[in-house]
Length: 470
Image (cartoon, rainbow, N blue to C red; front, side):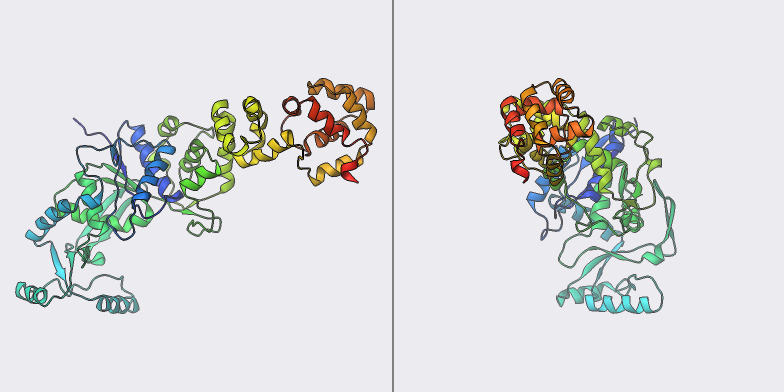
């Protein structure tokens, strides 16, 4: 029986997750969902100094908010755990002993200063930086003597000599690396902690991960990890290295250039489906430009549609998907989305009608505050454009409008037109400006009943003598 496809997301809980790593999570989740496979969440918290429990909890909440359910791993459990690397030290030690027994690792006593000097010399001679192999041939008695002297040491993986490591990258095609150019690399540091190359590869194999989609910055890690897994006779997943996200200038996306954490996106008021739709298209092509749910995004996800060129972040595109999500969300969700911002201004009995009235005129909840105050506040804000319109309009226009007022705006406007002869912009702009303080906004047939006759008449009469705009 063929094992199900299993992808994974393996973040380090050293901060809040941002666009780059959440897109990686999304792509892996879509890949497994498309194949009815397993999406695994593993926590790579070997950096004890920087890893914090609050970040682990935050990333779980962020993935859940985005709808990226995982079937194995953190919080969920499974047969191949534990799923935090800090709980797997004994597993790493066990397999390290196997490598030691076969002579595939060795202690390195080179100091940081020695290694830095060696790297500089290699750079000056045009060689790629790699370990010189100075400690690779130490005799057992030499090793014992150095340990007895208390000289700290790392453990290096002994790369095969004069060989090539080849693999087919799911995104970038055939890849070939010379083992001699890679050199022997550290898998356990002098403080006893394990390096990413080792634990990441080992966990993928032991947890039966079949597919790994990750950033292209990991591409050169892959031959090292393949070498480790081959040395341990463990299965090797299929790797695909996705393009990195850059800003408008082509530089790596950063907080300064617009990158936001998922928590910040949620706090601003983005809908999760909007973020999913934008990220799914950031470096990946879909035939459809329609807003899609996660099942549809997964059905249309194709590794062959992942681009190799850097993916350019564009906030206007993110906001485009936000707008589509807004138009498709149900009224109850819309009310909940707005309530924290306008709940103290809009009466409960009006919330659903208000939400539907402003749906097409807001992108985020804070946008609705203007319209809430324009409708319900006695001291409504008045824009400069509205003031200009009010000043241009004779007071007699507002006096007649106040006498003809009714809650059916179309009927009301027709009566004002018949009585004053005003039409088009000369009719509708003064009415909107007087009633809402703005020259644009939600449809007046929806707004006028919310303003109510008493408040509306008071606003029209306020401009009979243009007292507010002298």
